[in-house]
Image (cartoon, rainbow, N blue to C red; front, top):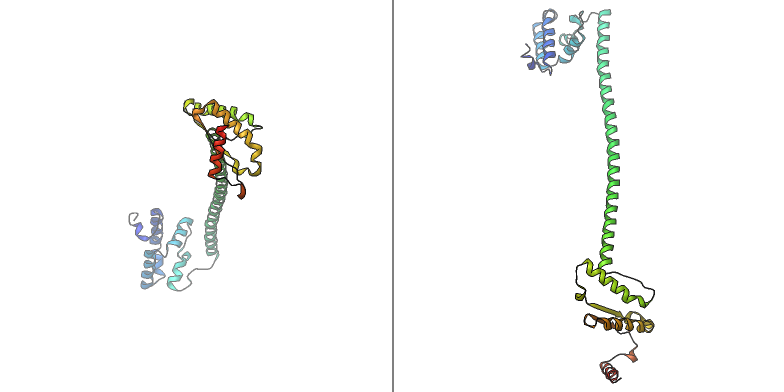
Length: 259
């Protein structure tokens, strides 16, 4: 019977065996209170699993005073109230109710535990997301800081910008930069060419205040290393009546050579 118990649609083999044994034990009593057709109907219900719940309850209770009238499905099959009223029936119903209440309490306890676990999971998940977001922000901030530092370092070595108090410090500052640049990029100093770019055109009327110092700086640099020094000078803007032209430029060159 244990081998064929699975045919009766019960998950547990042991319960199937015990429930079938219980049903077989009461077969003589069932037949006394049912017709042949009613018993066949009762058996078909057993095979289809309709009696599983109540048989399982009775097996779990293991009541030594269990009687045929305690099976509710018998009244359903016969269509008659076969249960004998009295204290015995009342006690059975109380025990069954207690068993159902115990199952409900167990389910509630499991559900409460799962709710607690789910709440804890959601709280930990939110904490993880918050921590991860903070880490991402800190990582991006650190990365940006490193990029800025590298960019400033590269710019300082390749294209340094200085604001000097007076023009006297231009050539010393330039010499220091060239020395540092040649060492960093492993270039010989005699391979370095210097090009001055003077933008008188952007100074407006103030170009005159800066013209003398700019020309002196360029002249001193060219005098020191004439082979590797050059200058590009943008002439200042002028009004229409004083516009430069080729003839005046050539005349000025001739005058300059004569002087």
